[in-house]
Image (cartoon, rainbow, N blue to C red):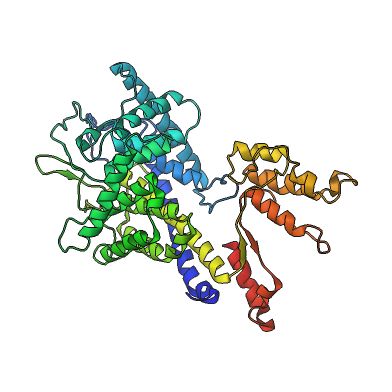
Length: 535
């Protein structure tokens, strides 16, 4: 794609078709999550259809419950307005949005009650999460619980404090020498379970600590472990029939990025992409080959492929902040597109008694049952679909802007606040472009062109009231303005100051951009320009 015209005539259509297809699948998956929730329990079945016996003592799993609540949070959060501007909104829609919110509340209330009840019964100093598969206070459950508690402000301060204590104990474990300590099995019939070292487990520990805003006591040990595993896997990738595991390579990459982002340079990232592209030639989904739990009878528990894809998405989103990595988006978008095609082919739709319509979802790639849906796996797929969707939107925006060659000015830290009211809002929202508190006059006082005719004629006051404060508050009501006047009256300064205050880049388009194709192409060029701006 060497020109804007070629991308807008071909590539962008393929990207938008993927987005439209993902929207349809997400809508149906949201309906499945809402429709299969048992409001009486309240909980979701582990698998659809639910073949468990009523007397099954292991039917309660905090890991599955937190996964499902988190999936709802992702679906609902994706359509809310961002901190300063709307995101690429996905609407759950209609009655299912309300059902999802009701399911989330009931499930979360039950989760909170059980965690507090277990703490009271066992007289434990901290919460105890229970998973029939992973034991108590395991890294998987704690990583999801940390996200769920962080997304639920108010009323759970005691559980947040307990979670921090548990995670603090986990981060003290040396992933090289004390891996077995990550899992604790007590009276759950899983005493035969053995822990297998896998980067997936310490990654979840680091992720939980990162979500809770905690320092990692064994940071150096974790970083050494991830770096060593990353380079081991890169070496294995060159050896035929070796122990190469593409999923563990991805987990190690995310671990390094979380602990020391500057350690990953462009050359190393290119090497990882090379290996993953090569791996996709034989397996579109980077199927994990290394378990993290096993039994003496030969049962093994692997990470699932979508967990590796989600990890890679997070890596790419972190690296997207650095312009040096922008040129790689075409490569990793191709990886995700292939994975999405594989996911779409594996989607299962079945009739279930007691539900108003057919339900659709996924099951583990280690299971070959075309008549079953595992909701915990489906919850992970929701995460991937929303992440891939965001990546596609970002790729479209970056690609069109790069090919258009418009002048783009990055937001700069403001030397002055717009006004005391704006500065207070910026500091409350921790806006990085907020001016440092000082005694300097604010922008309105310094730049306001006319103050003698009253507030109606004060440009900076009007821009603040109509644009700046609503956008900072997350409820924009205006999206355009026309500033006019002779040269030297500060029109450009208004745009630059507004962009800095909001933390937005400023895209400047001139007459020559419309005339780039000649006088006869002005209309077609104008259409392309507005398509770029829309993206």
